[in-house]
Length: 322
Image 1 (spheres, rainbow, N blue to C red):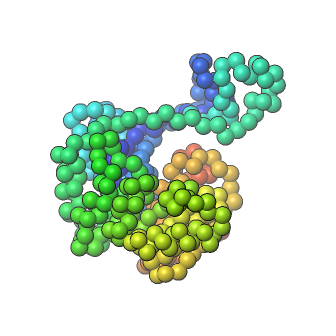
Image 2: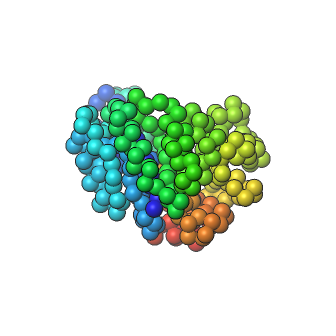
Image 3: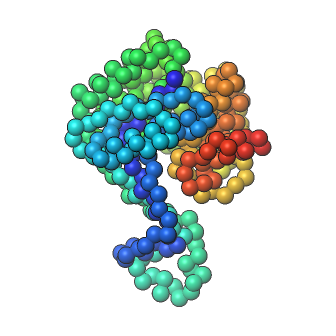
């Protein structure tokens, strides 16, 4: 079984409009509501690729109930801890061809000025606080995991929790032979690396932040990824956006794969899809890292090319060309 943990899941309300006018009333032309959070995204892609998955984490209030309902409709088993106080957060994602201040388009004077694309605005909620008592309930869920299981820790943690929470979870897994994946930033990631996670997935910008240097070539990326392996990570999967990904593998080899051609529609969830695809490819191929990377690239790209998370058929169509 693959378990994913989402400490601060969300109900994502996504809207689209030709022009978003800040400071004015806007009317949408398209809207949707999705369960959000990196661990949930990973879990949904894993299910679409046919792997068993159980979602762990914390939900609260009517928004938490809807997150759980939608995750179940996506085929995931859920074992969330229900908090007695607070509300799971609502994130608002505004997609628009152009974002302007109210009245700006009149000053511009041309319709062509409204045809610019790529503007996106996000308003993310806070989410509930998690007490140490509730955190211990989650830790006790981990005690049931065994040597055939995979645990995915991804995204930020909820307010009130210590920044070494992922490290503490890895320490709790010590001796259980559970493969742990960590997809996080800053101290959440760096504190966990000495505990030997099976996989970490920084992107290029996160590597540059970790090592305080600009990475201008694949060789630079490989050098940093290998340093992370020396510090304790098993596999280091570095996402490079439209340039694909690079893997510093547990076998000591480096793997490189380019992204397929396509139009970027939405980058939210692409990295999570890459993690899920990597795990699916790894499991299906009996641990072949090259195949795992191919699945990761196909899954991440398929999600990037559509409004939300990719379907299995879309992933497999891209996989055939990689």
